[in-house]
Length: 318
Image 1 (cartoon, helix red, strand yellow):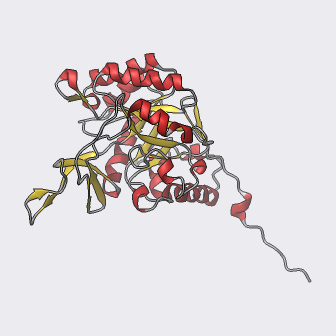
Image 2 (image 1 turned 90 degrees about the vertical axis):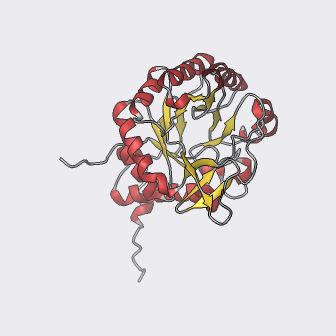
Image 3 (image 1 turned 135 degrees about the vertical axis):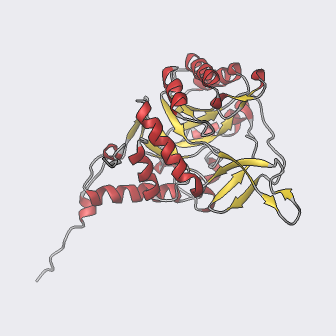
């Protein structure tokens, strides 16, 4: 007598994980946060990059940047403070050294760009627009505008609007504006980015932080202060995503402390269309793939056919 074989219900429940970020289609909503994944090539031997929704590379300015002196990172309770200083090879160096590898991937490359003037942002956007094959540009607006006395683009609505508008004019590529969390309310900045041509938002960037060595009485970072990331910022990041999602119609990529699928699902339920794994890449390079697998399993277990059913699904008390 042949034993009865019971089919695994999870294997019988295909789900649609694909999402749209402007004109850009991602095969799943899980990306990596800029600055935590190098230029992709550094992680190529540690995981299959083609399983990601997209590869997001470190910030690129027009000219090469040496970055800050070491030590540049310090671990803190449930997080990491970094002061890398946006080190990078510049547009030409990136195209020569990293683009030949990235353009062979089957998934899109999202290039994070920055500058110290509106004109520099626009020129970098223009250069990548002409490159061909780029998936999207992510605008890092947590940078000082030297023409405005060091004011950050991301904490001044007028400056933010100017840089998004200038980049929108310079490129037809999808634009994703990575907003600063260091504002009283994120809503005016989210709206300003949407109104001036951004196709999507990334929320959130790091928080200013500091750590002191009590034995030497000196800061643990050579730069004195840096940006705090990791699990400790997740509840704040989720709140920012939720607030922005209520105010704009464009997609949001949520990030900040994601370590597993449950974390990612929180961001989706708060209103994010996609998510990015950041600090976890440093200690578990497989995290993004684990998040994808866990998200798929959660949807199958809940009988959900499309990941978009999770977006904004939080049920508030009445």
